Image (cartoon, rainbow, N blue to C red; front, side, top):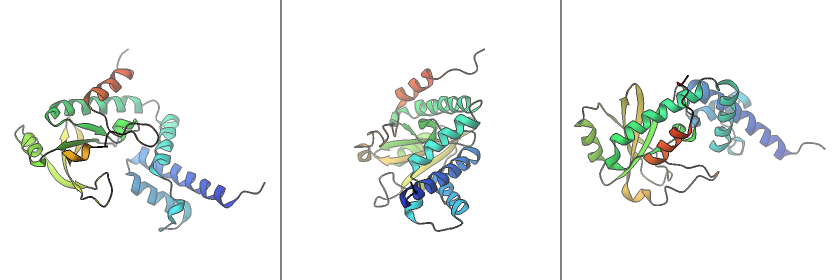
Length: 209
């Protein structure tokens, strides 16, 4: 049977996803940048058609496969370390009901990844003051809203915590409505303190003899 056009498209998406996954796992590239560079590498085209680009779920699965093949000896310990640090930060920020998100939650975090948290509060200034009163040096920036471009970007507070980078996206309290639904693949999009603690307890302590 001759391959059809749909098979060719799927194969190209898979190739782009695999190359992007390597960039993410090895270099800590963000998904958008990795996919764009991977498409250029695979297709030789800086502006590929939208139907050729893999979605983030496909790339994430490729990252998992890459980790299993090439980083299985080191990545689990790094992931646990990041989750333990994330839990410490979340406990410090517990008055604001923090949620963990990103690679540290989904299990693909590696050497170059930072910790990403989301808060749902009445005023971002309350979070800034809370951290400054505890002598935490902060930097402010903006992050696109997780609900899409039709919503305004949200303030993001970045700081170092025990040599790990932490980025806290501060959302309006009303944004929490519907935010705790699982992703399309069934995995959680956000995790509270108890869930993160359970993830750590369920993982092996690789420092034990």
